[in-house]
Image 1 (spheres, rainbow, N blue to C red):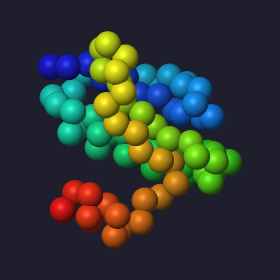
Image 2 (cartoon, one colour; image 1 turned 135 degrees about the horizontal axis):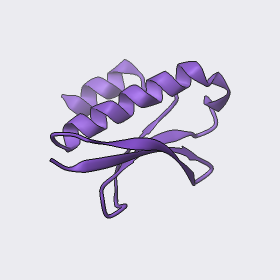
Image 3 (tube, helix red, strand yellow; image 1 turned 90 degrees about the vertical axis):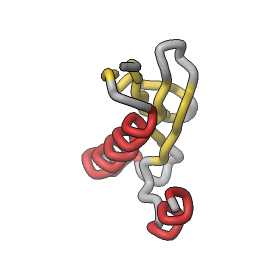
Image 4 (cartoon, rainbow, N blue to C red; image 1 turned 180 degrees about the horizontal axis):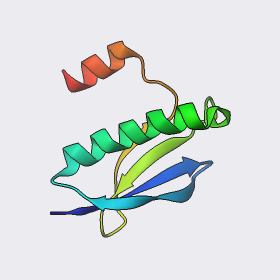
Length: 81
């Protein structure tokens, strides 16, 4: 199973939030969205500042990025639909 690393992106600086072994990239992307939602609640000072959570692989290649600001439902529906 692959290892994924999660970073908080602030002004293009990457602050490590940890890593984990997960079954596949889709699960890693879902975990990134969950982490972004949790950080948005725990750190409201980061909202509306362009902060995001990114997922990288073991070679430090960025695979996914999701903003801390809530994503409108109509965008989520379109993207996953």
